[in-house]
Image (tube, rainbow, N blue to C red; front, side, top):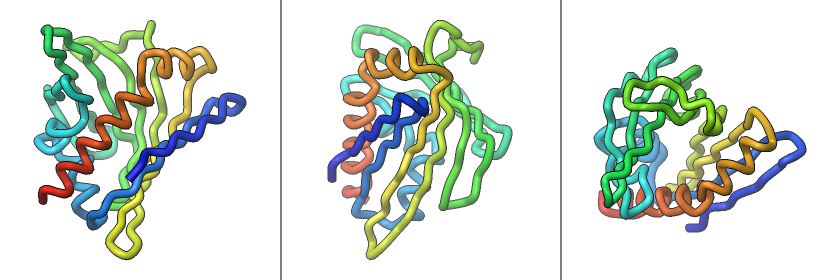
Length: 161
């Protein structure tokens, strides 16, 4: 399956869509369980590591992407709305190991939607940016390639289940 990136700079939005040959409940579990997220979230050769996760409204996932040379890129997702197995939304941003936001890097509002038809689950990630500069900065940092690789990791994990 291929990842589709649709960018709308005028409205500061990006939509990422990818379908998986797996039931919706399993895809949902892969996005909401820290031990599973760690297996696919980071593009190789990076690895994801969870510092903490409270998947509830108002909770958060504090994680790190660890590089092969010891690089550490921290992120925090603050969950705002959850409708079990169908959708969740929240604010995602770069931070440090204590979860303090790095304001020099972009933050993004995410809304993830999961829909199954005939055993194929489509995940749609609607992203809203604070500014055009933030949208461009994330793209320049390699988001499209990295997220596509991560979703490929997810596809491989799902196929092995």
